Image (cartoon, rainbow over all chains, first blue to last red; front, side, top):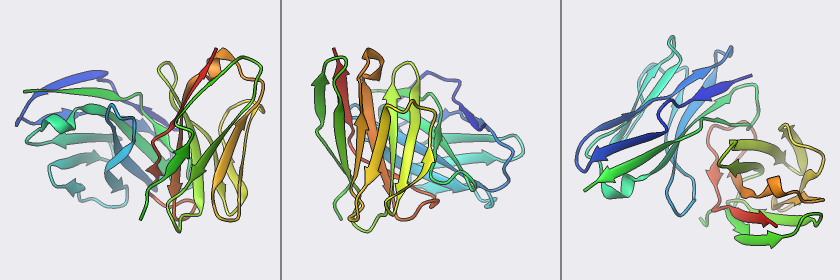
Length: 115
Length: 113
């Protein structure tokens, strides 16, 4: 079974600084997708960024970028120029090509942004 | 387009009762997935429906069931509620089953007393 591990339950960052959230996963599939979702206190899960495993280029969305290391099965999220609105729980998620729409989520990292 | 909507947002029930939660996907989306989120277990997949058919099912007892209507709206039912069923239930939709991105609703907070 696929597993997703987020080893940092809590992280903090100073406003305007950069922070990196870690995620590792375990799979025997060669084709899959990886995601970072953000869940602020309002509880609505919001897609931050996604990465297709077949793409070597790391995905980037404005201040958010990933470091995807397929061989190491690592998928970290870098948030640059952190803003107060970035404070939330961040979930790493995996979806395999053979598992339909079943997403496997990590346990989450709670990010605090310090003014 | 309007996002995924879930009703009700909050629900309080007692043990032994049953409950039905509703999810309306984004217009044009035909796949609806349900997740249970608890502090202890995190986010766990319940099931997915696509074109009124259950495509995938997670490891939950038969008390948890669902269905999808022809307009893609989905309902989830939990019978004989237990205290451990207290959770945030999230619904997510995508255009097709197996596409890469799911969009989540705000969730229904179920409390079982």
